[in-house]
Image 1 (cartoon, helix red, strand yellow):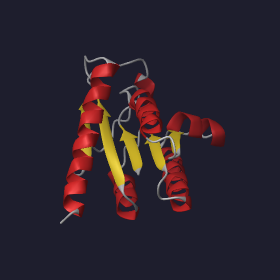
Image 2 (cartoon, one colour; image 1 turned 120 degrees about the vertical axis):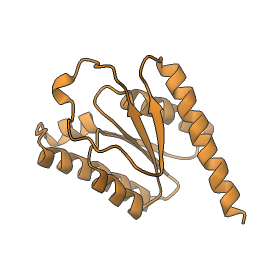
Image 3 (cartoon, helix red, strand yellow; image 1 turned 30 degrees about the horizontal axis):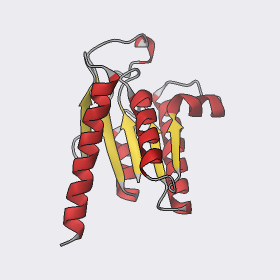
Image 4 (cartoon, helix red, strand yellow; image 1 turned 90 degrees about the vertical axis):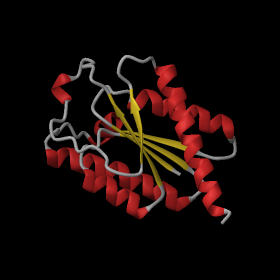
Length: 161
């Protein structure tokens, strides 16, 4: 399964992604869990271009790596944590493979105003919505885990029919 955390900088993507990574490892020690973080990917490829073209290149790399890992073993869990402001790229990923998209957002400015994406396109369908405004990470984490469990219950119910 691919879990795609999206949202503005400092909305809590990496923090919640790390919690999910830990939870997935604990729940099944035989499954491999990989995490692709946008900031680390930028460092790896030395891409400090925050223009639309630079962002698209970074997002495309993240999504390509995730699809590659999943192709190696469909039972791997892959967690992506990138701003990913462009709806078309996210929808292409959803069309190519099974993705749980997690949209984190906040009205708080948390120290990275210069990386704020003014043209961020909010998701329209098939996503988990987590508002991290004025809540601690434990509350956000519990909300995320509850919503992921609901998705799994619905998917299991549909597969039995």
